[in-house]
Image (cartoon, rainbow, N blue to C red; front, top):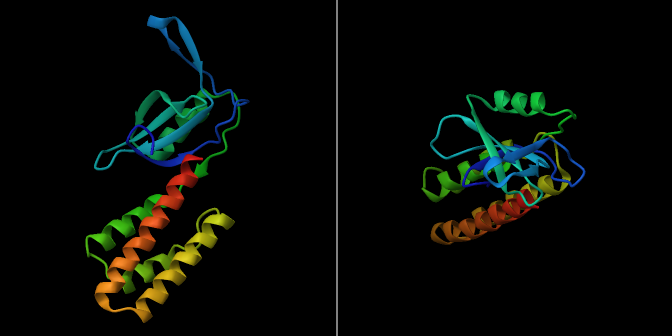
Length: 170
């Protein structure tokens, strides 16, 4: 998350990145852009291209109709090639929310997680965590009563979201 919005794609944030700068005229100050992120606010239309400093502070933003348009804006404004990193967590957060709202049972959640086990691109650590989650939920499904299943699954899912949230912020 950046500025309260869910990040979909971002760049590495490194001191050596030089994606330009944002000029704060009132302060007569230039702040270097070391990262970009494309994010979307819950329930909002459009995608925001965030320009960020080295501490992931949003120092500028533009609104775009599509994810592709936001990417192209960043690529057209930069003199260097941009390598984007995808965040697969957004899809999984939706699954978790539907489970917690009891729109999905644990079997449906397992089925949907099975289809999501190959993130694009495959990231070994994330893939391993997804496999662990799938195994944890399967064990819960076959070894606990319905009321226990729900609470244990929620605990597993909370740990899962915490894991990916930490990974996306690091």
